[in-house]
Image 1 (cartoon, rainbow, N blue to C red):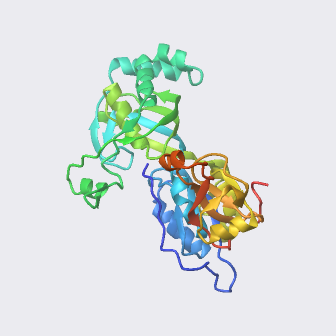
Image 2 (tube, one colour):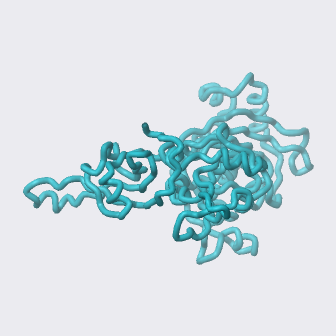
Length: 372
C-alpha cells in the first residue's frame, strides 16, 4: 500500500468553530469500507467534523478496507511518525489470474490453469483441519511453503507500477495508465510475520474459462512502504502462475487496531466522540518524556533543552512526545546527536541536549493523562 498523508495547509493559530469553541482535534481510527479512496474518506470527515486541518497516516487503496488513522488539527503534526509504523493485514491472493494493477480492480492480463503439482498442494491444504504449522505446511505444500519463506526473508521490494510514487515529477499510476513503461527501484522493507490462514482450489475448470481462481488466505505484519499487491505478484512469480490481490483488510496501523475503529458512516456526534485526545494518541505510539514547568516554557519557544528540563527524560534515542506537568503535548523532540570529536577534546563531557522537532499549540486536549 502507498504510504503518504493528505493534509491541507495549517492555519496560523488554533482552529475555532463558528460559535467560538475549539474545533475537534485528535486521532480518529476509522474502519474504511471498500470503495472510497483514502482521500475520499478524509474529504468526507472534513465536512462531518467541520475542520480544515485533517490528514491520514498511511493510504489504503480503494479495494481495501480496515484501519485508516485520521489526524485532526494539531494531530496532523504526528503524520510522519505514525505513517512510519508497522501495519498488519489479512489478505487473499488469487492464483492463476494476473491484473495490470495487481489487484481485483485492474484489467485481467493473464489467466492460466494451475500446474497439477500446485493444485495438489492446494487440495491438501483445503482438506486440512485448520491452518497448518510450519512443519505441516512444508510437508503438505512444499512449493507454497518455499514461496512464503522467500517472502519472509525479503529485504527489498519493487512497488507496483500503479502506485503514487513520483517518477520525473509524475505519479507512477498516471504514467502506467498512459501506457508508458514504468521502472521503479526496489525499496527497503521488512516482513515481521507472514502466515497462511487458509487455501482453496477454486472452482472447477480453469480461470481462463471463467472459473473461480484458487486462493491463499494470508495474515501479515509488515514495515512502512510494503505493498501487499506486490506480495501477490511475487508469490505468483515464485509459484510460476499469474496472481493478484483479491481482498485486503488492514487490521492494525501501529498501536491503532480495527477493534478501536469507528465506521465511516457513523454520524458526526459519534465521530467526535471517537476522537482520541492528542496526548493519549501520541503517547500510545511514541515514547513519552515529562517536562518541568521551566522545560515546557523553553520547549514552547523552540529552545534546546538539557536533562534538567525534564522530570522524566526520554528513555531511549529517537523522537519522543514531550508533555508538560499538566499532561499537555508541548512538542515532539529528540536528543541531539553527540559530537564525538568535540567531546574527546573537552576536559569534561558535555551534558545531554535535546531539540524540538515539532511544536504544538497550547490548545492540546488534556481529557486524559496517558503517561500518569
